[in-house]
Length: 397
Image 1: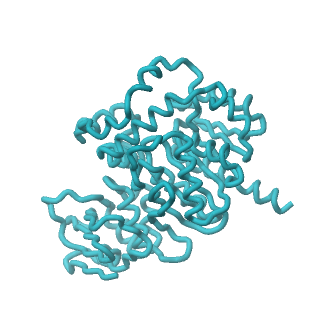
Image 2: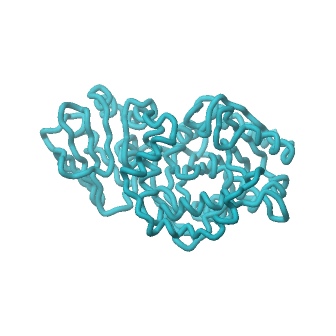
Image 3: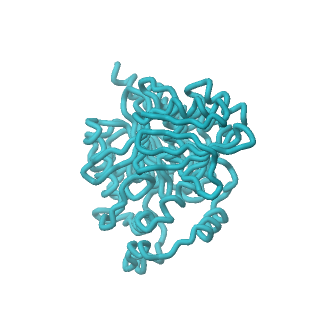
């Protein structure tokens, strides 16, 4: 590792860059530019290349890959406390925009290198490389994001679980920084096989799973197909097969999602559409999530993966021999369903159907929308910790 710092830079930024540890953060690209702003009236760029970090005055003619912005007191706190960067981000005192994987990785690489600290790396598996962030030690918990999201949507959950668990947040294939193959199904079965492949690569016999939205559907599929690999499943507003009529199904079956490879997607147009349809787009977590969505969607492979996954959610058969609701009663691992009373995507009335299919499942209703771990983090994380602790208590008895 080597670092070069500009003597003109504020001392807080110099100390931050000087303790950059590339062992914690796998950059995954030849080089990157991170703009750090707010320490004083000037901005600076951190140039990452290989194992080296260099702090230079900001180049206003170059668009940075990520932006980290905080006030002078917060930068000073981050420089003095090796754990301060992640804490400042979670509390909203530090903004990370554009590429959150890069920004969070930089924070991790300049934080305390203690055992169990945050690490970001790429894991080779039988289904391609999967990007993960992990922290903590103990029983493994794998966290799976929703459609269009990335592992960053579970950053608060990772922090909440890490004191008691080896918490692992993943980018599903086709999303975030994981590989994005073209000729794969991007359905629940494919994603489930990718998750068991990840367990194999990490040499984990079993793990608990947490899934939000589409990630919940993936976690259910892992539990149905490989129950021996799953201890418990916590499902946060999980995507479930539609029970009402799907008028567009006959037409969507003939639309190849690979059209996303050639569809033009100007950033300004897509950004405007997304911000109009997502409530609270000016809130920091929502804005950061939009950045992550755009980062994948604005690439041809990411767009094709998004279309394929969305299409498969809509087309999943609810009933019949292979139907979701036909198979759901066979889910063996203990499960917790967390519902948002104001969820417009997976309405809480689905809970009635789940209770009929899985009378042994646990349920929790929260006053929130579709992403409980971000909208009601304290209540959601306390519920997860209790649910997983009940497993450990039962084993001790």
